Length: 87
Image (cartoon, rainbow, N blue to C red):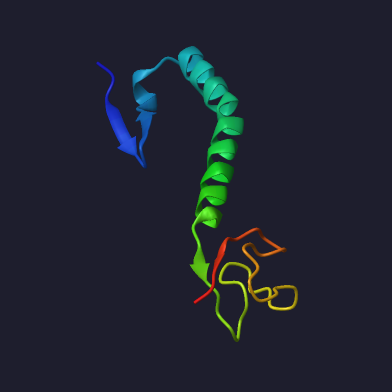
């Protein structure tokens, strides 16, 4: 019986339970998921930027700190794309 260990929502497999050939196949499949992992991380980053954050008047954008290109009433930071909320 394989043991399932949950780490940050992903299932990790106990390597001691597999033959070396099976372990190589698992490693190859995990590498194939790397582009998916990158896409999910990028999607999460974009989702976080879509949540409006209060602009800090002395520092500018709350995400990247850009204060030179932000005009009053801008809905998004021109540098990083963070959605801005004006009080």
